Image 1 (tube, rainbow, N blue to C red):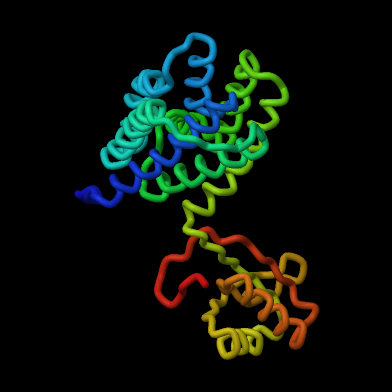
Image 2: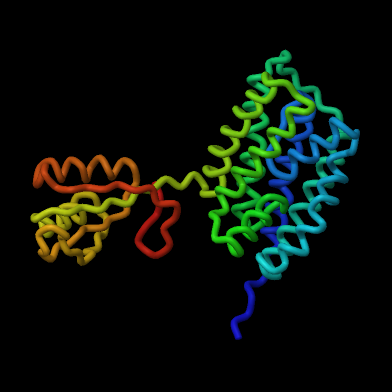
Length: 283
């Protein structure tokens, strides 16, 4: 039987740090400027605005039934990290409501929205990068994905739309649009932080001059390449497809090689979220 991965103290520390950053932005920019939020955090803001329920408490209350659901989805290690992240988030939300910070943004809602998205993105990215979540929509999304086969992104999108619509019960359209800006910034920042600023491209090249192109890539760009066996649907002929992983600057170098050797080569460039293995370091 395969043993589950051990717990790492650094993961608990970084998840706590991530929730602290998230909570700081949540209290000082979302709550202070009446900006809504998606997910369970958005529900806590609705409860705070309409019923004066402290988000520090409602965050835990709303997640309790989801923890039961999450045990079946995340496994022991993932669930403990999730509980740790959720509890830390509530603690820091409670703490930052009692610590006064003087943040002068001159009542500029655009700056408030940008800062809300940046802090949420940095905090959330750290939590995700070290194996945790803050519960809520992530648990629901993964459950629906397993049971119904619906992609987690679609479920989270629908949940956010629903909660943001409900948020119109306490904010106006102007604040809602600033919330949309904050959500967009969050989505961009969280991806960068979660992947460590990792920017890599995969390139698929189909050419009759594959041997010369591959040798040039290895010699001039200093990247290894792999041949993938393929067959032309129309011609029925066997082909060799070159697959190579590159940094953005190296993509330009390979394009220059292709324009020199075979300008008619078919090329597909894809985003690569992560590369695991020897011989590659992001630049």
